[in-house]
Length: 278
Image (cartoon, rainbow, N blue to C red; front, side, top):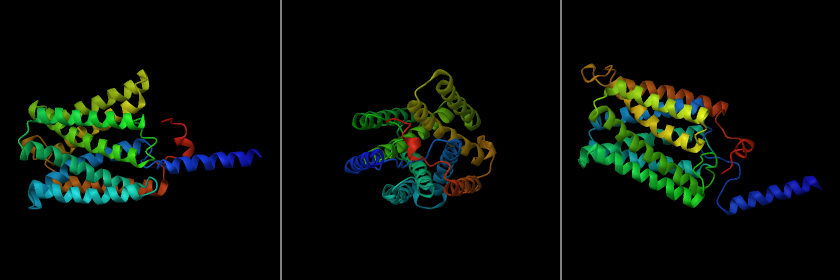
């Protein structure tokens, strides 16, 4: 009798989830592990160097490259939305593409439209805040432990795009306008991320806000690292070039994603997701 009741309850929960467009226990994004942060930083670096490489060598111009990468991102998002649950081989290519598009959004504002970095940083910060407000008002949570509905996934990816664009603008503002340089900028953003981690683990800063603040800060960290490695020595870099830097980091990302696809160490299990209340 108890077994039948349990089955009935589970079936009812599944039906309720299905009727609301949610997939019970199926999170569409990875668990936040050390692998998550490593790949995220590497993808942001690839986004910075790949955007520069495509703009300089593809012969399409900034607008042409923006259209091409936006089209590829749209295809990647369609595949991601159609996937029933998190798949490393689908999710991380979308992150890599969105990192390039986010970089191009900031570059177009600055280089094509002539918007000052101070203005673009402010506008993008406001846009991100609006996304969070609308997301929370609709879903009553910003947690990434329950990206199990189409609406939540839409807001998640929109927020991710905004963090990449904002992080690019903020990183450029610090390294160029404030004359910190690539290496010092990377150190600064790494220290800020460390401060967020300390505030979370030692001072009980809310986990959701800790995640999104750190997620935002990894973008300028990655772009600063990418610039430091790829830019000529005369411009404060190591002179590896955009091609070598992109290939190096893409290789590491590919290796880690293949490992996660096989090991599934970053897959949120239903019983784990149940512990993270929305």
